[in-house]
Image (cartoon, rainbow, N blue to C red; front, side, top):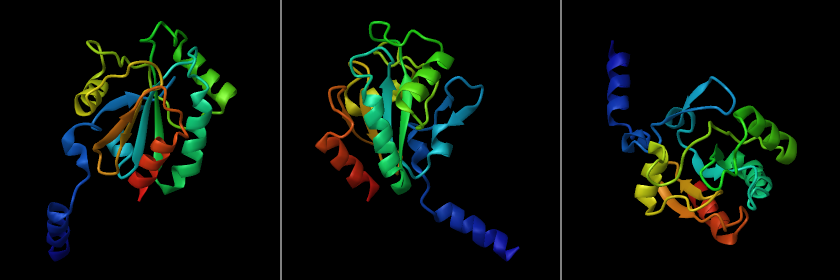
Amino acid sequence: MRQFFALLIILLISPTFACNSGLLDQNFRKLASAETVNLCEAYEGKVLLVVNTASKCGYTPQYEGLEKLYAQYQKQGLVVLGFPSNDFLGQEPGTEAEIQDFCRLTYDVNFPMFEKTTVKQNNAHSFYARLAELSGTYPTWNFHKYLIGRDGELITQFSPHTAPFDAALVAAIEQALQ
């Protein structure tokens, strides 16, 4: 009985992961799957780079750099999360299965990808609406990036023009991983 109360006290006074903010307390279906993932539960304590993606965009080659970032920093705690979106000139028109095949076959994408998601202002999914509220900006195009710290709080955002290995983005990731 003492062990139970000791454990209860530890749980009550221990710092908890910041799902309380609500930012990561979101459920998304994995791309082309029926499996649902709660971002908070799945990525507790990780640094997240959240990116809205598209397969038929001038920035689509960023998939390659995002995958390299993920591979390089994954062991240190970085997870890239891809959210395909068809919000900008219909540049993600395919089915989820087609998107998944494209990403894997063309860019060997292994980072987690989720269901097609609306990111544009006025219709944005609640996750993207909250990211926009916290950062002051909605995605302006495909491959907009939001960096979230281990505590589940937004650190900063980067425009679609920012390449995955841009010095400022890499520096922000490395600082967040420390």
